[in-house]
Image (cartoon, rainbow, N blue to C red; front, top):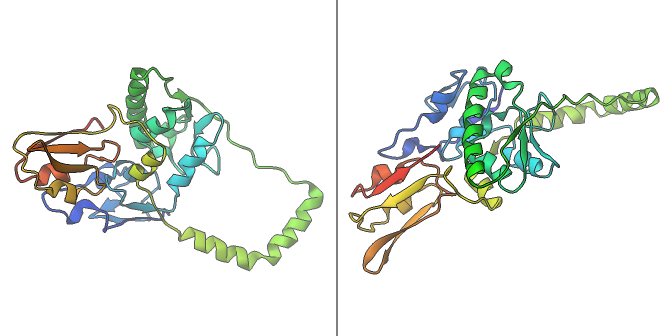
Length: 271
């Protein structure tokens, strides 16, 4: 049973002129309905995390820590828990922009060899995201993502003499361990990819949304007030409205475009 839920304070559902069902539409287990996640159906693939434009999906996986740990590997390799207990529960939470952030400065390998058998929806998703990231890497004259097959790590064997010692130690501390495990099982993490990308000093490119402004803009500032990630501001410049836009922060949620009183904004999203 996966421990996931939708943070309604971050979800787009309470905004006007916008309808977002990305998490529900992508879920291969049909575990999401009306912003409620059926934990019995959820297999923790993370696809909902990958497509949520506002980081509203909370889970028992600390994606920030896991992705940061990948950056400290040499070489960098993305794996799932079928390969290593310290890895992501599933690679479905990745998207092309996260892949770009990891591969921009150092070569990146990814093990998707088990995805098709484990979860075909995740395999299809990753194929498309890897292809898009590789196109951007090629345009930047950087090495493409390397597909690898990493052998599962074998459990370490303890010397026989130590087994009895640890057995008695673990038995004596069983109640404490149970309490810790229960606390960890109920821990939930919020993951906003925009925040993580900013911490990596990621360079925006064609994988990121683009926003343009036409002359009908009145600089009312509504788009700035609505933007969940504060990706844009409208200001007066030389007696005309001007747009300051940060594509790194934009998730193409559409709030600005759909609520602009003058229909002055055009959003281009290559995701």
